[in-house]
View (cartoon, rainbow, N blue to C red):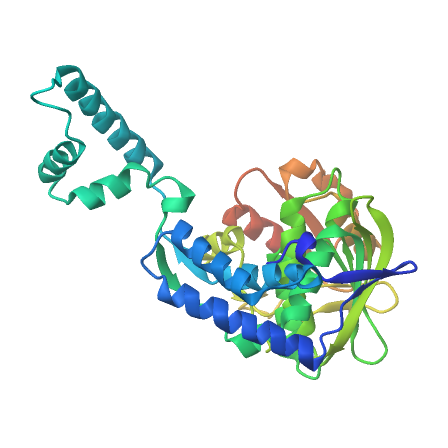
Length: 410
């Protein structure tokens, strides 16, 4: 993902606008991506330092003027995102350095004019003891340094695809500076909506979803800068959700951002038709997947629906459950939603929706860290709040859905 300093954007009054991706600019992006990608493929097996040097030489050869340096750096970053480097083994490298340096110090003390210190002989001897070569041993001495990590593989996007999606990548970086985001989406395929809503939940974003009269939805999202002191992780997750929004047939985004060194408040807009292939629905978050596995081992009399419908209370809001439980003996259905980890606000939005008359039985699960009590929904017979400490208990969820379902079907 790009960072904000790599975005080609200009201020126009109180608006922030991306530099238009005209055919000439896209051709330039594609050419740079092809050149950088070729270098990356040629350097598989080389160190990160060697790859960086080769990419620098390419940039110099491209003779990028000042106005284009940001574009060159941005394309290089996107190409580099496709590189997979070996994982550093800090403990092994540190241990190896201590041993080799200790042996070297001892041999230097014993060295004399007739028997000088021989670095190569020391490395050869140490390598034979380990069944390796002196070259491999020397490389391992600093294997925990990023510059010495070796490039294992390169799986970057095709240059044409990178150029086509470049504007979307820039928009992702802009949203890292957002305080508020509003997306409007419309899709013909219900699966596209389901993938989008699941992505928002998988990324643990604060989303308020409202159905529109044309079959679409308006999605209000908090920006990372709206959180206390901002949140880099939340900003990255907001950016990762953008391709799912852009996979809709018609989409638009309007965001309030703080831009530049002075954090000037500006309005940012982007939109259009589907610019990304509809993404597959992301898998369940780990905590829900673990809960599902535990629940299915119970003799509960309930089955789990992994793709429940969106619950809409017209004029008030939308709720997107993670799961629904269906009782075998009478078809009773209880929905289930794991609420956000970032803020208590997500809990109160659901409480307000239930109190406004959401006509569905639903159990909300919320982490104890958000300091919300289960008694909030005690007076609402169709909804309940389950507060968990570390993991979601399958038995406690079963008790609560049995209480919500009672003897009624539907």
